[in-house]
Image (cartoon, rainbow, N blue to C red; front, top):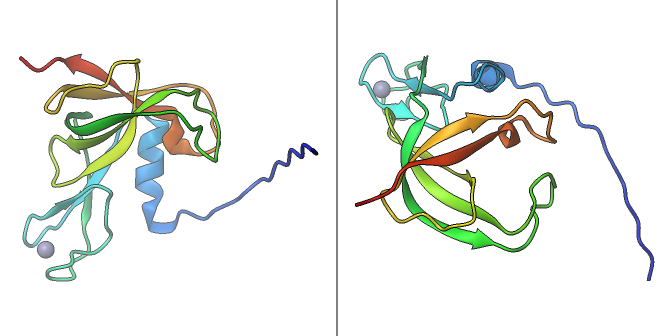
Length: 140
Ligand SMILES: [Zn+2]
């Protein structure tokens, strides 16, 4: 049995997604909206898929509702998350879209549970790992 541990440093140009990453730095999730038809996206898109208009950036309130959730017992390949952890599909408020992301805590939240994004100050492997969601309001 041999144990090998390797670390690599990556540098990615984020290009037109810069406002999204700047938002993460400033504690806000950002989405895009088409100025022509009003369609919205999260994850953000640069161009509208209906009319090819260049989209505009806007800030989301950072809240959403659980669509589905599960407990994960295998650490993610990029590290930085202790197992087990809660992974959920979350429909975000203020946009036609959502995110599959970590929910803080040990209990699996019910469908419809209201959650809010939180940002940590640590510097993880990927900027999105600074974010997690916390349960704000249980379902009735
Ligand atoms: Zn459009």
